[in-house]
Image 1 (cartoon, one colour):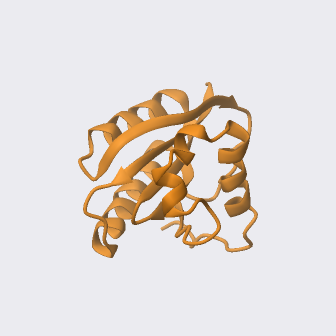
Image 2 (image 1 turned 180 degrees about the horizontal axis):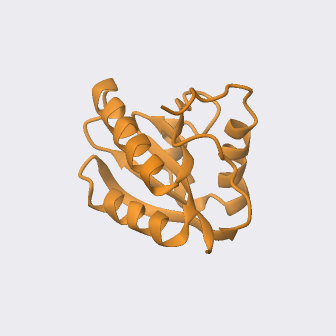
Image 3 (image 1 turned 120 degrees about the horizontal axis):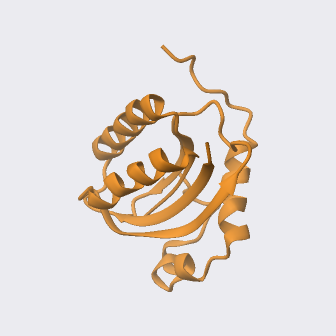
Length: 138
């Protein structure tokens, strides 16, 4: 079975804590069911999400996200075959990238479109290096 890692960016539509909670609840439920792991970098002006797992299931998940009206203009930043997961214990880790990722002005000026694959993966490597462990699965 081929495993892939897919990273996309989108703009939130109507962002607030309740919407974010709903997205995370949906993602964690579906990802556990589909053997997908990953992380979501989230701010009021930007989502960047890494999905990893079986190729067919990751592609189906991304297709659902592209249809979800809580995401505006989703675009693929990276798609690659992997042997090991970056977030093996996380159905969906989240990080409120308030200060350590691009500024709002940089996002408006095209930082997402100009980002290299190494830069994007670096964001997620930083999150995966955190010592916080997930809650045990039910």
